[in-house]
Length: 222
Image 1 (cartoon, rainbow, N blue to C red):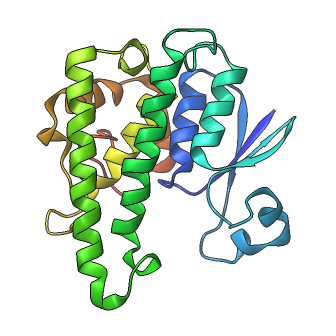
Image 2: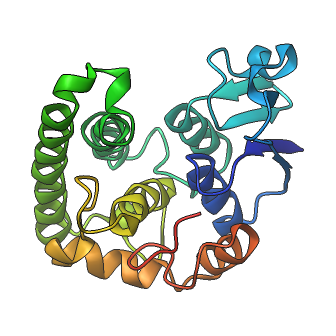
């Protein structure tokens, strides 16, 4: 049995959505973010920097969202293209592209103080925003042109839900905040996310974590 250590609407949601989509049994362990639970010795053994998610498996403990999704894909056929599949290489390419070009830059938007001084925080956020917009444009074009089998809403993979989570965060910010980027600016991507949020897994996670009915395209942030 797996155990997912989570905080509602944090990166753990991408893992939870994937587990629910593929009906993989797991236990959910809520981490109290108002206390120092993430700094406990026990939690730091699983996640050295105290980051969410952490994931306990019969083979050992894991952290890092992308690593967990990759590992789950290797353990559960259908969750991602098989290692021997011709689709495996492009799947990995875009999974890591999303991690590097979008997720990392989102963190700079949310926490500019981690990568810059207070005086240059606005410049840092604007640069991160611009890089995300370029990346989303590339992804939107890829979805429209290539129509990859591993990024279909009617047969989703872990990559769908990872991208959905990141787009959820940006859709949910107030329009005055640099972190607000609407998925409507990327019609092929928006269409995929709109269909994805109607799936049972998305609806179940939305109910479990209090995320609203339109979990990706018009979200209620926690």
